[in-house]
Length: 104
Image 1 (spheres, rainbow, N blue to C red):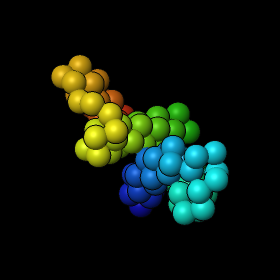
Image 2: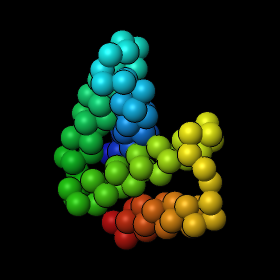
Image 3: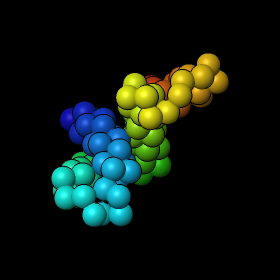
């Protein structure tokens, strides 16, 4: 259960990170609310996961999922360009996350 919550919390990290970029310094209400809600839920899920997972592993997985999904979302929406090197480095992040789960 802790791994599922951790993965969902990583997805929410991408949500709040993306929303933060759209708040325009917290002057836009909807992205600001999405940011605050996503942040609170993401942190709560991470905290729950830390009850049974090692901190270093859980944090690395949480950040890796959030970072990779944030970049992928930006590429899909056209906010950021795709290059082969970016794809390679994203694959390395994802491979690292999967590897950490595999050796836990």
